[in-house]
Amino acid sequence: MEQNLAERLYSQAVALDKEGKSEEAADLYRQSGDLFQSQAEKTKSYKAFYNAGISFYKLGEMVRALQNLKACLHAERRFIPAHLLVAQIYQWDGNDEKTEIYLQNVLKIDETQKSALGGLAMFYYEKNRFPESLQMLERYLTLYPNNPQLKILKTEVLAKQGNFKQSATLLKEMVTKDQGFISFNQTIEKAWQEEDAVARKSFQQIQVKAKKKLKEFKAKLNLAEENPENFSPPDPQEALDLSLLYLFNGDPEKAVQYLVYAQKLKDSENS
Image (cartoon, rainbow, N blue to C red):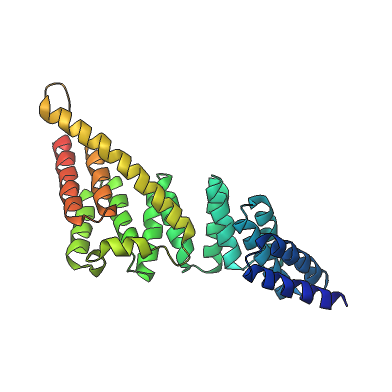
């Protein structure tokens, strides 16, 4: 009788979900999950809790979403989609420690998992943890070589560590050989449409920062050109930021020019 009730509640939740009634569906998923759990129906319980978590997530009820997703993981700790969604929620909440933990959890289950590798590459970049970012980028691009955003990010990470020449070489190679750059503006919109939600949010944040850097760079460059005695030209890092901006806005030729300019500035500083 109780088992029939659990099945019935789960079926009702599925029907409500299809009608867009996420709130009613979430409650029924949760109830069915509790019943399945009490019956030691492990597979059915973790799926019910996961669906409840997704429904609450859609409603913006992140606390309840996390409760259900963690109940899902308690029933099946190797269920990767739940780890990824928990990481995404913690990222939006600004909880860096938990974001990293849950993405790393995924790689412990599957070291080739695309979303976790891409998400951690972007996460470490944002936190200025460049060696770790580069490690994730290399792992990602070895397995999934056709992501232009992460190829771009690799050039940036190399340059951030002072390796401008290798960065410029990689960038020039991409511009001349990589078919992804032929239709870059279309590609940039599609790159994160699979399951890379964590990476996508980081990428959007980088775009915002790059646009801000553009204004600062141009203002400083104009002042240096108009009055070189009183104003110094931009430094290599500022030129590098501008290079990244042009890449993210679909102009790889200007990106290469500013990366080369950054190298010249760096060489002049060291001479």
